[in-house]
Length: 206
Ligand code: ADP
Ligand code: MG
Image 1: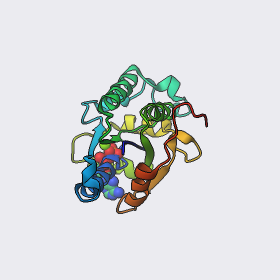
Image 2: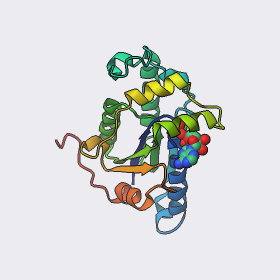
Image 3: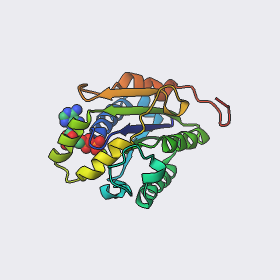
Image 4: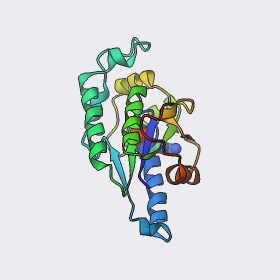
C-alpha cells in the first residue's frame, strides 16, 4: 500500500495531535502479522519537521477584509511554505511509505495539487478534516505548550481564509471529519480507505 493522508483544519485545531494518534494506530497495525510483511513505514510531514515558521502564514493584509480571497492575501512566504511542503512530499513518496501530511492544507487548490501528485504515483488517498470551533482553537493556541503557536492576527486571518474540505469533490474524498469531542481518529475507515481504496489511473477523468 502506498498512501497519502492529507490533514486539514484550522490552526491549533488539533491536527498534530490527531496525526500522532493515527500514526500510533498505523504503526501498531503494521508491526504485526499479516501486515508486517509489507515493510511499510509511516512518515509525518509537517511545518515543524520542515522548519517552516508559523509567521509564514500571516498574509499580506489585515483581517479587516475577511472576504478577500486567498489569491489576494496569500503572501510570498506562504507560497514558499507550500512549495517546501510539496517538494518534501514528492521526495518522500515511496512504495513502502504511508505519508501523513500534517499541515493546514487550507487552500483548495493546494489540496487539488496534492491529489494530482498522489494520482500520478498511484497512491491511495484520503483527507482527515480536524474540526474545532474558532474559540477552542484560539484558547488552545494560547495554551500551547510547544511554543509553536500562531500570533492572534495570523490565527484570525487563517480562519477567515480557510477553505473547508468537501466530500463532494474528488480531491478531498474520501473525507473523514474528526470533531474535537471525539477521543480518537476513525482508524478502521481510514485503514479501509488506504488499503482497499479504488486507485484510478492518471487522467481517468472525473
Ligand atoms: P495543530 O497541529 O492543528 O496546530 P495541535 O495538535 O498542536 O494543533 O494542538 C494545539 C493545542 O491544542 C495542543 O496543546 C493540544 O494539546 C490542544 N488540543 C488539540 N486538540 C484538542 C482536543 N480535542 N481537546 C483538548 N485539547 C486539544
Ligand atoms: Mg501542528
